[in-house]
Image (cartoon, rainbow, N blue to C red; front, side, top):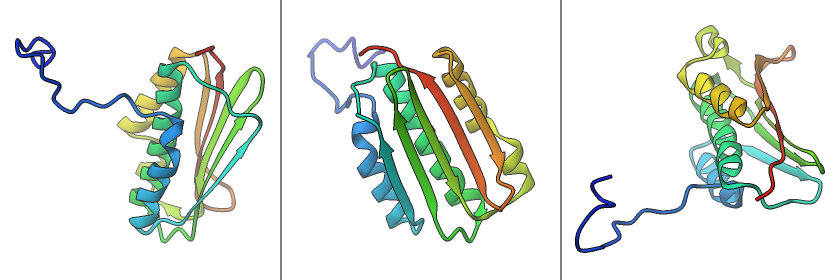
Length: 144
């Protein structure tokens, strides 16, 4: 807040909040860290309200972060984003073995649940029966 109230009016490098338009850069960071990531987007993309866009970005970011940190030897991670006229769906999953503590959820997952609930959405975070872990989110679309 102090930076905003500066008398000289100088901008100190603040950038707009990230959104799905920065998805390719986000995925590139995880790929360069050694996590193979496949991305699939279905449906006609739509502009999202800023808060919803940030929430969607954070879901992908947290899902991939969990894959990188908590999965033992994942051979790949997958991000699927689907647009319909009423909902945005996101699925982030991997095929690695997760330690029990990560699968039970930590502060990151708690924060995601809170973000998703603000928009009246649903979030499922669970181990996959065939191995790995997944985040599944459904968010009602809010006009931008």
